[in-house]
Image (cartoon, rainbow, N blue to C red; front, side, top):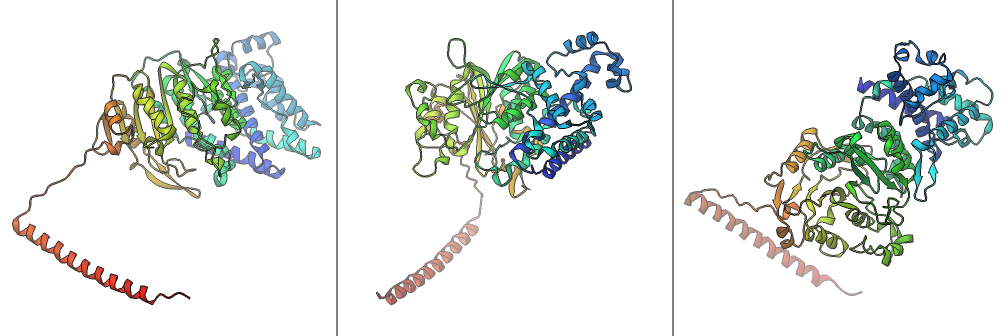
Length: 542
């Protein structure tokens, strides 16, 4: 059933893309807005029907609940809406079935746009995403306005509604994020072709997200009322994984991301995953220059759990000097990367995010952060200063070096830092998982895919603090200091020399073979030297 539902959902997305293409919006930036917003309208409509039937046995038993509910008085209907809590509240004229039945009316595009705007206004307090200045970004735009030819708008709206009416989401509402994740990737994949350009939306592989969440939470089943934060949240892959590992009702999500597109996707993600109560904490804005989550005393909010896969390289030269000012010194304790003379896009912005994360951790907080593997062995600069702080202040739990090409969109090798402010007296586990995984092709790119067994091996080895030859090792903070603050597991593995017993005759035979080979190599070397000398003699100046 899951596979069939996934297939139908992808088919729905393909159909919506085809409609947009037919009306001149193929791979247009507005196509993304249209598809995600009508997808959300469809989902909200079906979720409303599912929730309303759980509240009223009469509707649950009805052959057609939408027809049955038309007989309810306005008073009874309002009483039902009040019981819905943090779910979308729709008026009867806003149902998708109502739109479908009215699609032959004149000015249908305006009717659909007005309906979506009214739904957004009615649910503004629940579903709005805020910007860093506090302005609210509503759920829906007037979608037909993206069609430049007014005479085509009604037909466009009818085509959209007809496709939405063919399929129902209800069977999926007991599922969790791991199930929906592939749908989100499918929804966005066409917008990141050929690398997606400078501001592409990238997704943390779900294997990496699961590993990060399961190591962060470990075997602790007694977690409640905690805060989870991602300062570069994207569409929320990491936040969804940790929320499900903890329990959606036991945590509150906080995030900030500069991308409008990602913030919209994250909001959709929260709605799909029973985390609507966290939507007020989803902020669209610049985390580094204008962090939104501030305590009443003016200090940055501290969090229990932080997960992040920050951008590694990005031009932030327009606000770089602001970050380097005195007001930001405490947060960016190791310094701000300089502006390159040539390619500003090579600025290591992840170093700023990593410092922000360390600064934003609560006194007992834990974090998991994806970094380029080069970070863990850099001999100087900001990288080493950050590593020194993690060791000198005893807050590193471990490092896992992942396989190459674990991200299909980049060849950069990555490692995951696990930070734990409660690990002052503990050991640090360093793991080299770079040899795991199977290489597969994904489009034009090669990707490494971890099996479920390999994921579990990484998680269990870390959580059980096990040492395995050439895979994992436990070291002390002093050990790391003595290795020049290197976090590379390979530098701590024992060098093993295997001895094989041989007889005197076998030894003599090997030595004679080595001597004969060396003699032949030396003869070849002399011939090459003579030939080079001859060729040099033939060279003349002209």
